[in-house]
Picture 1 (spheres, rainbow, N blue to C red):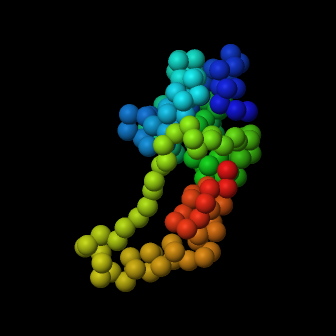
Picture 2: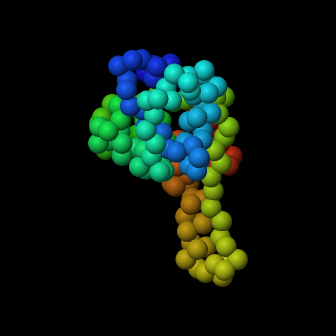
Picture 3: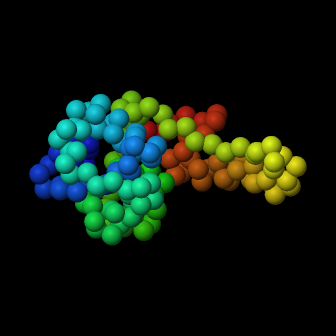
Length: 141
């Protein structure tokens, strides 16, 4: 399957997160527009409030296809429903994500331990496995 496959008449329901307020949905719209498919697939779109609900549409069969985060697509619950295809990075703006320790939590030992844990080699490997590009790493797409 590729993005062009979404125009196939046999595909009648495509789930994406709502691009009006969900970052993954905005990136899905960008990719569909960049590939010239938006007008062809827009009538087939069903919108999830967020990326987790969008994946749920696919998992429950309420959508035949979903444009979702790789981390969700390779989750065993969804992976058993079918395969996935990575959308080329050049079809959408990057989706930057991160975490911070707020000023209120700067003296909180648990917040510091969480930040240290997230920076550990083991966690970095898990994040990369699930499709996140971390500082100091490059995309493997």
